Amino acid sequence: MTTQDCCAAGTLKSGRKYDLAVIGAGSAGFSAAITGAELGANVALIGHGTVGGTCVNIGCVPSKTMIRATETLYQAEAASRFAGIRADGRIIDWRAVVRQKDELVSSLRQAKYSDLLPAYNTIAYREGAARLSPNGVVLDGEPIAARRVIIATGAAPALPAISGIETVPYLTSTSALELEQLPASLLVIGGGYIGCELGQMFARAGVKVIIAARRRLLPEAEPEISDALAQYFTEEGLIIRDGLTYRQIEQTPEGVALSVLIDGRAETMTAERVLVTSGRRPNTDGFGFREAGIALLPNGGIEVDDRMRTSKIGVYAAGDVTGRDQFVYMAAYGARIAAENALNGNSKRYDSSAMPAVVFTDPQVASVGLTEAEARAQGIAVKTSTLKLSHVPRALAARDTRGLIKLVAEAKSGRILGAHIIAPEGGDSIQTAALAINVGLTVGQLAQTIFPYLTTVEGLKLAAQTFAKDVAKLSCCA
Image (cartoon, rainbow, N blue to C red; front, side):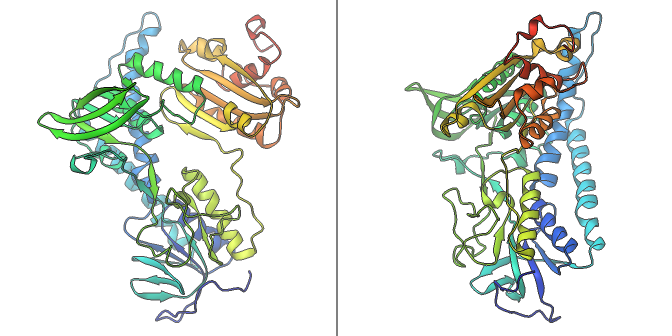
């Protein structure tokens, strides 16, 4: 470990000095603390409130189990796509669904966070409100002596700039998952991944859902995929209103009313409840970061370089608080990089060029690497292929051909730059594309790779073959 200290040498009552202080006890904080312990460091892990952070408590785990719950209702209704089969799915007790979700959250929080701490005798868990002062870390007024600091304070739902939004009883992605009674109708503000996931979930539970978005659904995705998802949502009964400008929202006797402009025309959308899913803001307020010399980005995130260093020597940041790549696995990955660099000399680089991402709608949206637009913006000459799932034998056998696969490749070399999938099992296929990008495969090499027949991931091979062949004229597995 290097010897340059970032913080003034405060002392605890025990007189203990830590090699590393980690502010935040979520996924990034635990990852940093565990990495530090594995490297032989004495670590102070500072948490405030419930341990585990967003993913296990109010994000990934609760949302995905409830999405799966309502997916069974859709599958029951869709069973008739097979001749001679009918099924019935219905909600008999929504409170039971919520309680089962809560039990899963509690058990995973205990197993994956609380119960881990005794296994690491060099991690000291400290509870309280921490601040980063110009001279170091202060916990409830008490200085903590640490040679290096990692900030991992996460993010929280952000409110959109809509007049009146603070005066209505809006739901967030957290409170929406706690509802024990389903509303008759729900207005979802925002067409990003949270709005799409939760909007479809509530629609499948029998709620009338309107998604109101300034841009198209999943605006960062390939246009073909966004358009396809909007089509599937519409077929399920969701109302999609995009390309609009928010004007004002207000409480009404029936619920809420949102005034918007669409193509210059005024329109009002009404619903019993409103769910705000317009993004997340890094938790940087109230920690003294700016006062301590930490540079912040326009989105409120902490500015870091590719070694996870902040603008203050000896202080690092990782996870959602950086305002980028807000996925739990990237938070854990970045925190490992931060801890290794903090303790062993800044030799590790953060690299998200082959970062897979999954939106847990149905069909799932999965992507890795560059979109076509991103590649062209970088001045790269590209070629693309798009394959409908109607050419994938797995989809035909399942009688569910919703979706497509798009590959983006460098025109000259054929090197794969990006892969984008919308398919019922798309999330389980994207890692193959991530590995292909990570090792620099070309579309020709991917097309020659052996894939198991009647799998969704075989669609990647077929999409690669599409660059040079008409796959409709190939026999099975050719």
